[in-house]
Image (cartoon, rainbow, N blue to C red; front, side, top):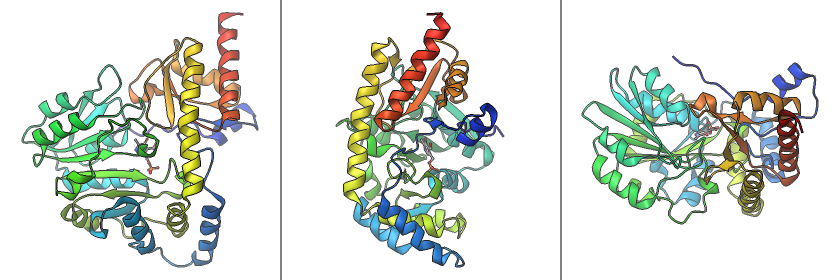
Length: 357
Ligand SMILES: Cc1ncc(COP(=O)(O)O)c(C=O)c1O
């Protein structure tokens, strides 16, 4: 089994370099954090810490019914998108099955495949960093049980479009289960983005995975959810751990779905700052990938691990995408403007010292 390579934590960098003012832009967390109302809801839940969490968090599921338009029997809440991505592999992958996933992309797909003894089949992205759905459809055979897609894709930020999705689904439907990881869905503003909800409502074997870790700022609370046809939900329910959720996370996520004003503002600011940071990087002659997520990935024109190390010394943690299989690029999370300014200043200092200015 290949292990997971996480982004460097603030604590690890602080210990190693003796720094105390560090900004982490390496894991696409929300640096706006959750709203005060959400924090209060989590705090109130502390009084129930001696009780087991709900196996099915009814208030949260009802809030998701309102939010998503899916009925209860189409929904499942899990311990982050991570648990749900793995759960689908647990149910559908038999030893020797082929599992298709994009490359470079999020490591959980290859992990889910190999955990269940499946054969991972990485399919290269297009030159624009988007899923190559045609290439994927061509790879589906009788031994293919599961396909993971990621839109927007981590670490490139690319999406797939409605027409490409419709064609793909026609070619593949009912030959394999298709998981669409939409962890970054809330940051999409491209009108061509493929909507898959109607296909799920129509019973296609499609699983849409979402998370509270990104826009809602609850990465530490570990709450994700998925929507799928009821017969898929029932199988996933049989295999999942009954108490994988936690009481504070459930309370926080339920409140987050009510606090439209706060999260709409975070969403708006993230999109504005994504455009701004992209222009700033391009002015410095970096090639930036088209991103529909809360991060930008750019060709850093040097060894990415080396750049990330030098940035750490300035107290700024960014993510070299080398462990994803994308060399020579770094990924930076969108954050409130003062933090992005600090990132740019550190980048300027590092690059001018390399050039010997
Ligand atoms: C594409 C993608 N899917 C899933 C996750 C994990 O989300 P969660 O925190 O809900 O487990 C991440 C986290 O970075 C991600 O980038």
